[in-house]
Length: 122
Ligand SMILES: [Zn+2]
Image (tube, rainbow, N blue to C red):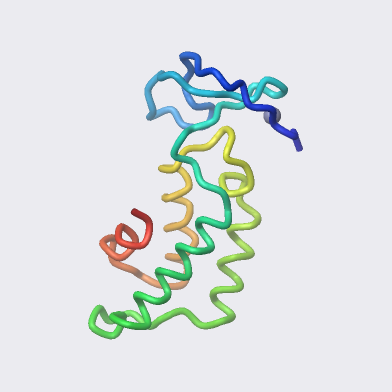
């Protein structure tokens, strides 16, 4: 994997793996050329958001008809997140892609209302 060296200056680029975003001024890695989005977060950010999400489910989940996550489920979710390239590398990804992947992984275990994701992730 590339040891990314940031360009420092921004140039007009489209993000690599996301076609919905427009061409804007972005930084990139001068070694591999992958684009860096300002909003992209590292895995630790999403591990914390998973914790927030679970806390919300523990407090209010019963009112929404959703159980909180078990230890095993949280471990499986973490393992899935660790295996996803969008969380492994802030270059070449966008927050929107990460957000959608986070929801896709968690939704394998719980059908959680969109507003709960929104509160946890914004
Ligand atoms: Zn690189």
